[in-house]
Amino acid sequence: MPSYYDIDTILAEEELLVVKPSFDFSLLAHLDPDSSHLQRRSRKRPRGDDDDGIEKDHDDNDTADNSNGGLPEGTKIKMPLWAVERWALLGFIRFPSLPRHYGRKMKERLEADPVSVDLRSKNEHYFQTGMLLVNLLLRASHVALRHSSA
Image 1 (cartoon, helix red, strand yellow):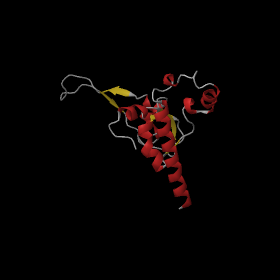
Image 2: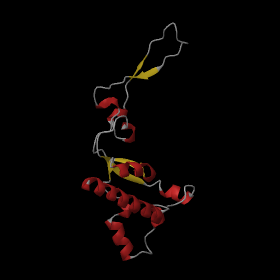
Image 3: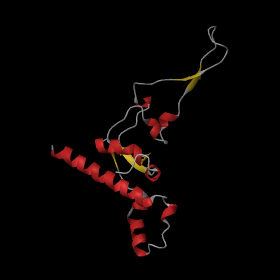
Image 4: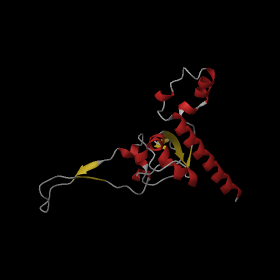
């Protein structure tokens, strides 16, 4: 386990991963940049006698449907490694794919000519991030197996 104050670990955990929620999350639509929920309608409140002469914007809160800021199940979102760790161990999210620079094509390039591949251009902490990612995936799969066999 790396040190809490290790700057290399902190930087390695900033790798963005594509994840999908296993169920609907309320009030987390802000995690999805393509969400139509983020286009908020604002309306002007008319000035009243109790105001200080400033018009203020405020939002309509719709809680009856999915426009209340919910994140639907199966939506692809990008989150940093440090943020998905607890959710993955609890089974709240799934990993549909690894980042490109940890995929099959990159593996083939590394096996063909490891000297010519510039790993720093992909991630400055390529190996440490890879080790953290593998550790997370193994722990999440063990937890999932333990829950399915119980």
